[in-house]
Amino acid sequence: MSKQKARSAALLGAMDGEGFPPLAHGAGSGSARPDSSVPALGMVSELARDELRLARERVAQLQGQLDAVAAAGSVQLVDPAKITHTQYRDRDELGFRDEKYEELKEDIRRKGRNEQPILLRPARAENVAAGFEFEVVWGHRRHRVTSELGIPVEAIVRDVTDREAVLLMSSENARREGLSQYEQARKYRTWLKAGLFENMVAIAEAEGVHKATISRIMSINDLPDEVFVALKDPRKVTGLFAAKFLQAAETNEEAVESLKDLEKKLTPGELLKKVAPVGPKMDPIEFKAGERRIFEAVPVAAEGGTKFSELRLHIELDQDKLRRLAEFAASL
Image 1 (cartoon, rainbow, N blue to C red):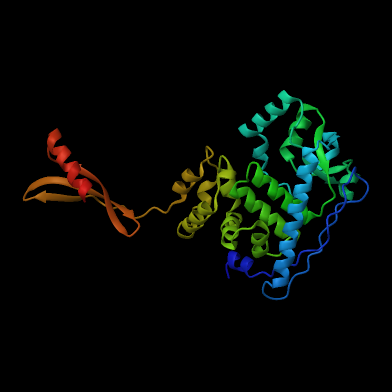
Image 2 (image 1 turned 30 degrees about the horizontal axis):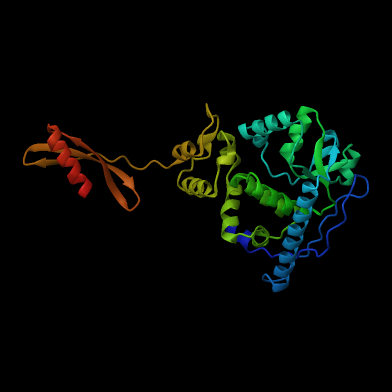
């Protein structure tokens, strides 16, 4: 059974049914509660779907509460040095160095504050021991910017579970700048490893998308590390790219090896060209009228068989004849 089929065959876990905790006003009052998922024994049940639906409704309710708090200006000013991120941060480090990040930084520098507050939760015990009071739920880039600028960050603090935190993070990303498929793939892998969701079916239900979409995105995690090292920006990797590379690697045993020790980083398109299997060389086919050579047709391997995309003329043609030839070719 393939990795993807094995993942799809995993069982769906139930969601916990607790309500929202009250607003928190600082760390040390308790760490974020871990979720207690219990795997379902069998196919996805109606109960599991109902629990997942209720969880999404709870997150939507909390999002509405957060929007109201932000609109009312009821935010806290927090020292960025007291804040850390969790294992669920879903934006790649390149997202903290690119042009959009610099634009955000300049906007906050000019205004002297982050107009859109970030969401924090009280730090769990191990982070409290490390000197932190809060963890970022969403707003990682705004937190990083304020830290670099040396100004307090405007924040809302709420005590939420891990599962609530990741769903809130996804909701916020959808409302602002969405993640790349590469970042989504890494995010879903983290969710599964942490036991927040039992399988891709559960993730698809939580994200409100078809499970085939999650499966396609998750195929990015099947790519070897050499692929990401060879790329200028791994965030450009898509599920379609992953499918094409893995297919090429099946017929080209040197595909992965060819990516090592490259002189320069590649785009996904350049990388696919590099690993594409080389077919047998095909010689041009000559066409004659009697003994007179007319043209050569250069064959190329194509889907559905050999095609001819280049003609080499051996006769002289004036502009009128070239035009007529072009019209004839266009009619084919």
